[in-house]
Length: 317
Image (cartoon, rainbow, N blue to C red; front, side, top):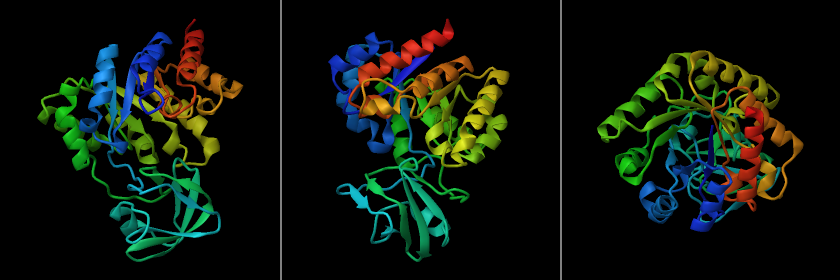
């Protein structure tokens, strides 16, 4: 069983990383949507010094994200906001594909917008407000946005991945076999064919195409944040069960991730529902579980890892 944390400001010290390892953490994820691998030499040195053997990098891939903001932006409910030229930066492919009436979910659905008009930007009404920060996710339910499998930044990160000690690559928003083949080719060209591929299932295209690429990946990641934006939220548990069953039947390892202990970003003790969620994921056959914001930015990173590991191990008894 593998237990992953995500490195970020809350745990980016040798002391905290050692405590996470002592709590049972076996590997780390580094989210490269917030900065290139070359920019994290300090983190890489720390990871090596602590002796953490398993390092996963999470690429940008074909994911839709808000661009960089000078400072967080407050979007009040009922207000208007512009995405694209002259407003909040977003991929031009989204502006070109969206039409009036399209809903947009930002930051794993914490904020909800409706597109009213489209020109060189998307003119939107805020249906569910909040504070928007740089590089947060955008989901456009029902809309196909033609994004490349790998960004130029992804390719640059892959070229130095092996020399940085990377053991696995997480590809977001896998849409089908071609995405996996493109990543395999990029790893081969980088001289790193040994790096494992983790296919993140985050949209309906990935769910439907799973059988065609299941045999091509080292591990499937049931990434429930954006996957939960792709369907009514009450359908997500069933989808997770179906994906788990498909991986088990094919003998392919799978990971469950996102909001496993979300309340522990600000509380020292998880909810009963959260520990039940971890237990059920492992009982369903998950070979890995991962914490994201809980360790990267939460107030109780070590305690969260302890609850993750102890609950999972209980399910294995």
